[in-house]
Amino acid sequence: MATDYDAPRKNDDDVNEDSIEELKSRRTDKSSGSVDVDETEHAEGFELPGADLSGEELSVRVLPRQADEFTCSKCFLVHHRSQLAEEDGGLPVCSDCA
Image (cartoon, rainbow, N blue to C red; front, side, top):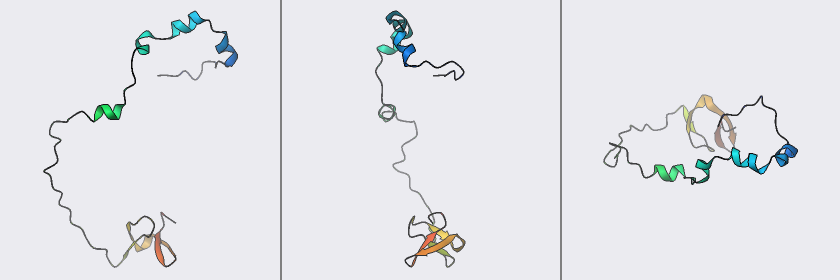
């Protein structure tokens, strides 16, 4: 819903002064009968055409850690030695986690 930020704001006194008829006219009847629907629950029922990936296999070549790389003891990612910030209790820590 668009908001006009230039419009004057109403304080609590202005809201209490509105008449019941005015409040009823502001309410939209079509939204009063609708029920909120959880979008994630609703989306789980959709099947996309060609989306069956149960028979797919990924082929990824995994390289062992190189001599100039280390594994961070906090995020467990492999980084280049240039990313080594400190050793925390003898364990290497990357500059992102430091």
